Amino acid sequence: MKIFNPDSPFMTVLSRIADFMIINVFTLVLCVPIITSGAALTACYYTMLKIRRDEDSGIVKLYFKSFKENFKQAAVITLIVIALMGIPAYILGVVNANFKDAVPTVARVLLAGAVLLVAFLFSMVFPVLSRFSNTIGGTIKAGIMVAVSNPPRSFLIIIMTVAPFYLLYNFPVILPVVLMFGISLPAFLSVCLYNKQFIKMEERANEAHGIPVPGSEDEHIFND
Image (cartoon, rainbow, N blue to C red; front, side):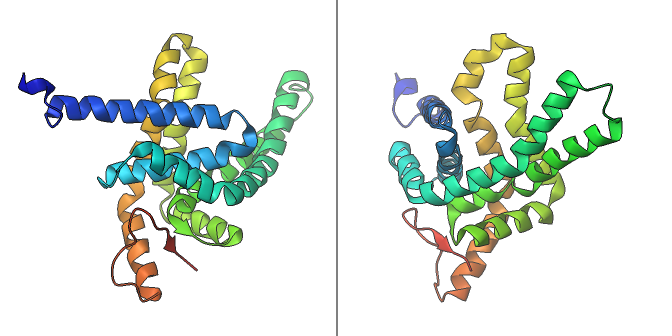
């Protein structure tokens, strides 16, 4: 039957669903050791960008290529995010659990605001790391600039990233869906939002370095 032809739309959709599931499982597993979570997310964004641009020739190879290349920088950035976001989040949790009536509401709002601010500022850092080669400081700076350049998009990316796990907390029955698509699908939707801006950034970076065409799928774009 033509429907089962490898090039048929039906089989193409099934293949893409399988790709999302594979990337989701890899990312979930590699996020368990906290220190590797940044590299896992970076690899997820990298692979999803390749899928979005129809440059995905072997998603497993692409995923682990990015994971390996960006591991060191991603680990350092992960520790920075944990320090900046984890401390106020931990204090807020302790306050809400034990001292809610004793601590003024404004203090709790400020703690929550600090967590949200860090999440906002770093919402685009791992996507930037997945595509552009730079120093750690340069990557963080570029990621913050991209996030600030389009606040609605950045907040939407945060919402899409957190939503599956918020829903899972309230509706445990969706666990199978989260295990299959909870990270990869939001990452793909995020890629769709920032792909055009990244293309412009790549063109500017290539022009600055005298490169006439965008980098191939085996290259990062260098950005100063």
